Length: 279
Image (cartoon, rainbow, N blue to C red; front, side, top):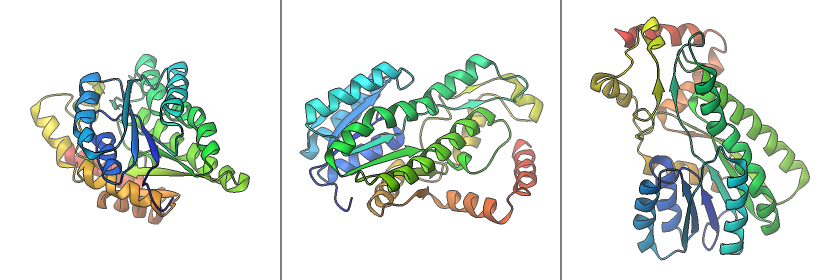
């Protein structure tokens, strides 16, 4: 997909962060938009920002953990826009906890959004993308889909799963020749509100990590070095180049090379870094 002009892109989690950045950048490229989020206020704000770009915009409140809702939205988008060329499965949440003290309810909450939401979005939109003969599935993983990190076992589980799911999907699409491709996206620290809205529990104190407070938020956000707009441009350029794996931000490249050079020893680096930042 060398051009996004007159295409139709569906984006989950479009109410803020990377999702909003994608909507704005695609709108500037004359791509029509179908936007969704569970945060209706944030979604309305995104719609207001893209409405002046001269492209057609539809929006819908969608919980990506609800399979029926995702399928209904996909059909609605195809009906309202006449086609769908791209689906950005971007919606996500975060959870900080040790494995020992993480509740099954919190684990399932994260997996239902971060992993199953991607699966539902992929399967719901794939038939519509096939119908165009020119489509792309973009699934947002993370640098935590490349490397395991203390306190992030649930997030790691989902993001590793998204990576494996998408890489297998891409290979199948290459073999089937539908005219549809797929990319796994691995952003580093992006300046979004995900840390503020994440769930954390007291088990982080067992690792020497603070659970909440302004200082903790600032410490998290120091690692957010890439803006959503810059992330969106990197992702869209990766789609244009049909990249299998799209790394977003300099820290994502560091993670990628660290795991390549130290496939198991990087875990010692991660433990040392976690202990250092906990001080």
